[in-house]
Length: 223
Length: 77
Image (tube, rainbow over all chains, first blue to last red; front, side, top):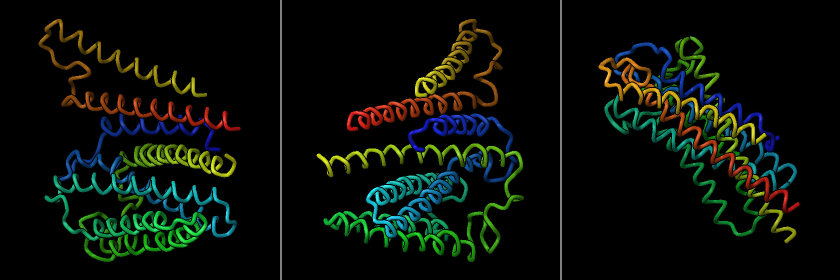
């Protein structure tokens, strides 16, 4: 599947659409936000990508725990890695966006804090992995840890920021991305351009890393 | 398949270059009219062009890496 090319081409066209319609398309005129509302196609897409990669990663970790296949461990690690890259990009871009709308790079918003904590938990996954020299033990323990890290995503980025007052949309109990919440002119670019485009790009980068890791695994086993 | 990828990228790239060259032409004529494609709506098209070039560059790089890994995979089998 990941050696096929059609979805890579699809990713290019999704992103081409995002980059053209994302800047040339009409957006609602809102005070303070102004044109920065277009960041929805880039900043928010990073977080969606991150969540998707973490979900895939935890699925492969569980698969590893069930079947003990080294390849499943490689899949889990590489998807978590791309997830962290996307998350860090989301954090940095969000911080720049916040500077010019909320007034500060970091305003201790519950969602900012939650996202930072979630990323630290995932960074610890790599610290844990790399501190164990035994390959099987490292794979097994980090797979178990990954399940807990994933469980921590729920309170840190999905529950707590919604219960308390937040500068982000979606505070105080209402969902962040209601179907009515996002302007109809932006919905198409967001759901049919930015989200699939950025996600598929991340998947492509991940599969390249997975293929490299599988090659080195094969090399270790046979050569 | 990779060839098709490359061809698509190249076509889009030439299209952008065409717009670019077109915009340069009107500069040479010293036509005071500023409303050509690249200079309309606050020059947003320039940003779009820059981003599309970056996008194409990144994808060409990824295609290249993909091809290299495929070659190693074939050699090892």
